Length: 394
Image (cartoon, rainbow, N blue to C red; front, top):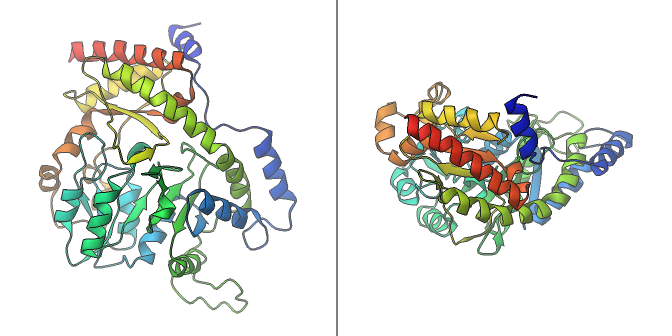
């Protein structure tokens, strides 16, 4: 057996996705019911009730992906051609593309260097008469500054649309996102905190917004329509019954997994902080429950190329490591449609924290935090060894 195989075996971190006979039984239940789409079966509608209840929301709408969830939520609050959406520049590209697919300009703003979440003063400075939504991304499960963002939304009249793709089950001062009177969107893609391979959801506190979203997610067609009366423009974002059946089980196991990760992250973060040159993601006292979608840390001063070398070595030694997101304005996709009237470097100058984080940040998949305390020590040992080698050779 080669060295790489030995290191993978010795670390032996939990696998992802996790499933057992409950998911198998749920799939069989969906298979044997009267129909396999949401209007004939029960799984989607039951999942929506359970997901809304778990997050303290009035309603939830299950959709085909987290990206579609964002697009639908933005459309409901009036985003379209000629409008703008404020997004953090450090995020997965779906955050900006959802706005751009609607013809709106995505306006990137800087993030906090400690939490990696949207910088509220930067968001405030970006508001114009065309702004229709502010989209905080709750990076790695850490809720962005909800108090300051809520005040900004109230003062400006611009609604918040929470990109909670990383934040299933998160709480702010004991409140769930559904209790905060804003729309929130979630992803169930294969790597997320609960998954059916793909899928997404939108939670609502306002019944009219929910009804508007329901209509648009089903090609603009009313529920009981039999005459093809498509009342508004929409698309087919409906979730299928099989995905919903799996997600109902995934939701049932989520709290236990969050509890484990909340115990493991302080252990790992403390060990990482002791490594010269390593800076773990910080926290915010307002976030009283963090599901820890990622274990994130920075190695300030290294280049993106060195960072990739470090990540590759960690992966070879059994740690599920990834280079962090590229700044959205440094991707070709961002400039393809509905781009702001700025160039890359002008945006970069007002996003200095993103410029640094996009080069030196690394994240570990949340399955690592489902391991034992001994495995947290083993992960830290790998990081210490690899970072020491990488920094020494830079």
